[in-house]
Each structure stands twice: as structure tokens, then as C-alpha cells.
Image (cartoon, rainbow, N blue to C red):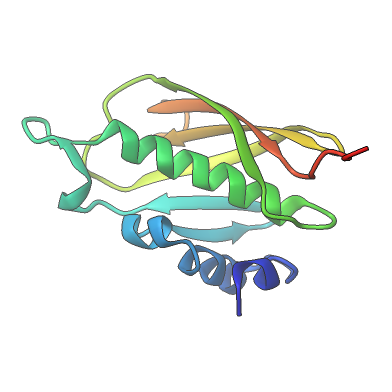
Length: 148
């Protein structure tokens, strides 16, 4: 079953795992997601292959960014009435502190969803949700523009 077919399912913990399993980079990162009520908590487990600064050790900034971007896209799909695969228009990331080699979490919220574009905010943290490691804003194309 393709990812396009899978996104038509109602999101629950099992469906989220199936979605992530269909995305090669999410599999490489080891991403996981779980439902907490109506909210989704994304998790990035520590893995030595994700280290960018070996002296700390800290996660590579690109890994943190990819984790957050994928989290935002999957969150958006899960919350859409008529799910489609979103395409990133832009992604703005603020690194607030080093992301050490430990469990990293992300939570997302849809700021606005129009007919063609959605804006999603993403926050990543490790030990304390009130002390985020990074915050991001993403714009996603969720429908092809009319070709008239």
C-alpha cells in the first residue's frame, strides 16, 4: 500500500507508524509518533549515526531540521479533512540550544490552513518541554493551484 493510500486512513498510533515507515528518511532517523488524546507527539531516539558534533556529543543540525519538517508535514496530514501529501514551500528554523544525543520530541500546531497553503509551527525539546531546543515555522502547499 502506498503512502498516498495510507494517508486516507484515520490517524491513530498504528497508522502513524505505517506512515513513518513509508518515508525512507523517517525510517533512517528512527522517527516514531504517538497519539496523546487528539495531539501527536513525535519522537527521535538517540543514535550515534545522527551526531553532528562529536565533542558534545550533539545531534547534527540537519537531523534536527529534518525531524521537525517531517513532524510538521505528518501532523498536517493527520489533521486534514481531505488528506493530501503536502509539499514544503519554505521552512524557517531557529536553533535555541544544542540538541544532545538523547531522546528528542516534537509537537506541532497548525497556525492556519487555507485551500492551498498551510502554516505549521513546530517545537522540539529534549528533557523539558518548556525549554525547547528549536522552533520552526513551515508553509506547505496542500493543493495544486488552478491551471486556468
